[in-house]
Length: 263
Image: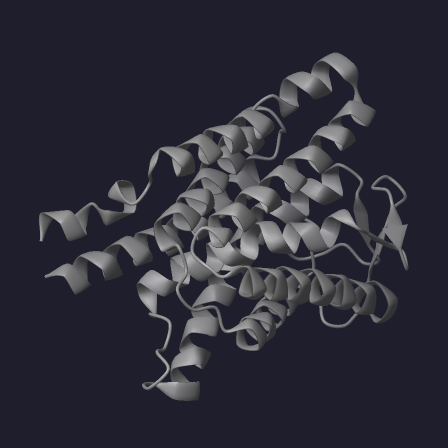
């Protein structure tokens, strides 16, 4: 019983811990870089951070999955991520009407190539957190109903991250809303769009055999870094508190579900 209670920590071997430290070391210096070198350096730092987290997540998946499944998942998430962002920026569906500025380059079809990598960097961690709450259906049980429940929880986990993300990216001038409103200038329909897209991507990929502990640690580290950064350095106390509560509630739900299962 005790071993099951600490499995989130016990499953983090030295290599996983190294990857988490690398991730933290990539994002922590961003406020210092911005203060010392200005906005251009900040943009470069953001791009490097997203790419590093996407690589870390992919490496963690590679340790648990066959190469073919990994490549299929990465390509699917990146391709769908670009497609939905292109559709969204061109039509307003499903996020509402917004436009990317020229600050993030390169772009294809007006969508920065970094954006699909941002989907990749947080979607598998959201799957991992969801797997503690609504376990991934096996080949021979639960079927479509089980996948729907898992995808719904994953969409909540992913959308909770956007409570941090969208206000910060708008503040940094990476994209703009046609009619700022709702949540710190972000239309509420945006969050419904995030849930819809995450739900759909999850059902398309149907990720089994996730390395849940290290990916959950990535989710938790992102939660902590975003909260501290926005509260202390980026002057975004409102999104900091809301994101802290949103992602924190998902993590507490996952921890409670894990503890209930171990009883």
